[in-house]
Figure 1 (cartoon, rainbow, N blue to C red):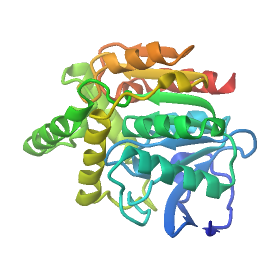
Figure 2 (figure 1 turned 180 degrees about the horizontal axis):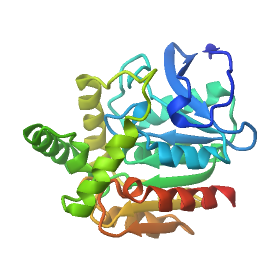
Figure 3 (figure 1 turned 135 degrees about the vertical axis):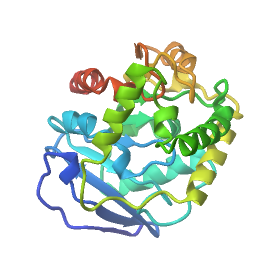
Length: 288
């Protein structure tokens, strides 16, 4: 493997200030950010559909980074990372492994959301020795019920967002009641706190290829989740329209010893609506 990595800089204490770095491995230039104290087991964040480095809730990142070395990254073909987005979740997991290996880590913790959770599961099953602790949020298992309908739901809410002249995440991630609308506005405002060195937008082609991979994942044979023996924390809202909340319960049943948190009156972005509660739970889980 050929690797080129930007030289390390100072330790950032807030995600909005963490510089974007690059690492080149196997011909792909990966964009990533890191913050928090180095040493110990790093926490790698796996992001969602159509998302880049700027789509992580800074309240969650900063809370974890107060105690842990945190790394966020754009997978191949996403945001500022080069190459083409693969059309399968398995290949995305392979790329994530290449990135993590190039960083020189032989043990990591993972925090994942939605599509990132699909990728994380495939990575853990293929490389079980790499992962110490696993956090799966707003996600579901390979072959899970209605995961293949994610593209349809996404396109519908893209249209709803366009008609309302609103960010589609308001519809995709949050309930359309007073509580959900307030949570959506607050979340979107937090995503704009970073003023400089913002990431490259995800292209339409990359987004469409991710949707193709999700549909394949949803129509695949179920994975053997008994192979996931790592301590696992699962979290979601109680009304997830994208990846149905019952799939979080399915993960909980099938991953032995896992813990489950379902946040009330919230949707796909339940962990963002309840960012303080989730961050506290995640840090407690990672600290054990």
